[in-house]
Amino acid sequence: YIERRYCTVDAPPAAVYATFTGLGGGRGWPYVHWAWRLRGLVDRLMGGVGFRRGRRHPDELQVGDAVDFLRVDALEEPRRLLRLRAEVKMPGRFWLQFEAQPLERGRTRLIQTIFFDPKGLLGLLYWHLFHPAHTLVFAGLIRTVAQQAEGRSARATPTASS
Image 1 (cartoon, rainbow, N blue to C red):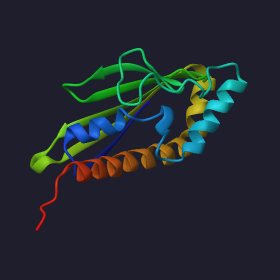
Image 2: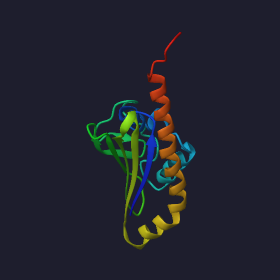
Image 3: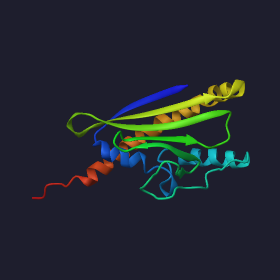
Image 4: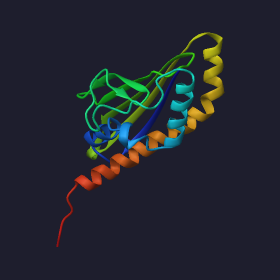
């Protein structure tokens, strides 16, 4: 299953990229952080890695880095792309990807893609059972990343003084 969301952000691609590559760890997840923590707790109870790993550095990422219960699978700065692979216990494989594409007048198209490769009937059941909750979480996440990137861009833009 592949699910994409698009959002136009009033910020340059570099600000958008810096925002989504800064997710997790000490900063947490900017939308329903408690749900991310709950998913980590459930994973821990099932013998998985849980939410306790954080991240190596608050601003820098490398392929292979842990970000809470996710792992950096792809990081392409020229394309401004980040793909995270979930390492939680689930009946299938899951990736969360962000991409920042330049638009006119310093704006950016933010693309969030969810990939889920179910494993058997249990994987299909998992997808359909949790899809409504995932839809809410990931729709809120892209909106919040966009808002934070716009705030980051506004703080970086000097204002004219009189």
